[in-house]
Length: 512
Image (cartoon, rainbow, N blue to C red; front, side, top):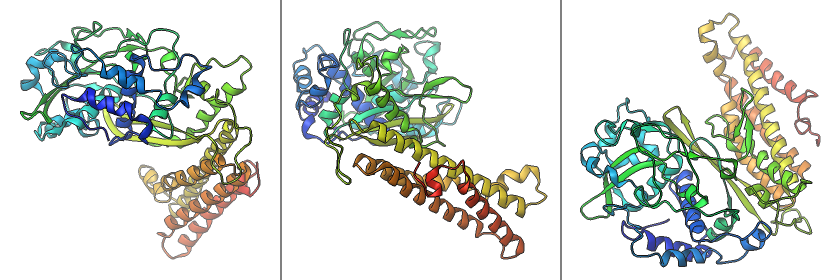
C-alpha cells in the first residue's frame, strides 16, 4: 500500500519506483484506485523518458529488471521549484489553487472525494452525508483524488458556479476511463507491470500535470470548452479530470474539507486508447468495451485474446501500436507447456470498469485473464466457447422458467407476469456461479491442458449447477399435481434445450 504525507509525495514515489522490481504489486482499496495509481506511475515514467526505444526492443526491455529505476532517479533530482506537495498554497499537487478563496464556504466534507461515498452525482439530491467533517488520512485522500481524475462520473457538482469560478464548473464530465473498460497487463512484479504497459513513442512524451496553475494553460469555466489536444502519454496519464482542492487539518496529516468541480476535457484519438477492445452496441455502433452491472467482464474476455491473435497472424506486419500488438511481439514458446505446468511467461490481462447509471455510481467490475505468448488462439477458443456455453445455459434457464410460469399461472395478471416469472428465473445465480469455473477453464488452458477436454468439464460443471439452481427454485411449488407438473415441465424444457442440435457440442457431451 502506498503511504505518504502531504509534503513527502515525491519521496514516497521515488522509493516506490526504485523498489518496483522487489514489490509484487501496488494495492488499492478498489480496482479503480489501483488503476489510478498505476496510471500516475506510468505518467512519471513517460515524463522521465523511461520507456522502450522501439517496438522491436519492447519484448527485451520488458525483461530488463530495474528498467524503471531511471524514473526514480529523475524524480529524486527534480528542481526545488517543482512542487510535489498536496497542500502547497499556490501549486498543490493534482489540484486547482484558484478554488482556495471558496473552499471554506463552499466546500464539503472529505467523503465527497471518494467516488463510492458520494451517492448520486446530481447536485439536486440530498447530500447531507457529505457534510460530515470526519477527516480523511492524507494517503487515502491522495489515492481518492487520483481515482476521481481518472474515473470520476458525470453529474452536477455541488459547487456554486455563480459564486466561484463560472457557470460550467458545475458540469462534471465523465473522466477518461469513466465510460469504458481499462485493460492493464499485470506482470510478476510492479516493475514488470509498468514495463508491460509502457509503449515506445513516435513523438514527445508530453508534460506531467502537477497542478492546475503549473505548466500548460487550462480551461476556464465561463463556457464549455472544446477538448484540448493531448501533448503525449505523460499528459494523458496524469490529466486533471477534476478541478479539486483539499484542505488539510491543522496537524497536516489528514484532509477535512474538499471542493470539487469540473476538470479538463481531452480530445482523444485512437492512439490514446491502446488497451481498448471494441464491441457492438444494440444500435449497431461500435465502442470500446464498457462496464455493465448485468454482464460480467469475463463474458467478453475472448475479445482480448482475439486482439492478440489478430496482431500475431496479420500479414501486414506488427508495428506494436497497441497493447495487444505488443503482446504479440513476444515470441511464442518453442514448446507448449506440458499439461499441468505453468508456461514460461504468464501475464494477466486485468480489465477494470466503473458501472454508473446516469449520475449514480453502482459498482466496480473487474476480471483477470491469463495470457501466455503463442497460446492466444487456444485461449481465445476457450474463452469464446466458455462464454457461448454460459449464454446458452442462461437462455435454457429462461425458457424453463417460462415453462413453469405457464403451468402455475394459467391466467396471469399482465401487471404481475414479470414478478411471477422471476420466481423461477435463476439466471442471476447461474451467472454469479459461472465465473469461478470460467477462471479455472482459462487457467487450465494456460497450463497446457487440452482445450476440448477443459470445455467438456466446464460445460458439465456449469449445466449441472444451473439445473440445481432451477430445481431449488421449483422446490417452492406446492406439493400437489399442479406443482409436480410445473416442476416436471420446467426441468424437461431445460434438459431438452441442452439436447438440441443447435446447443454447443460440449453441453451434449461432445467436443466441438
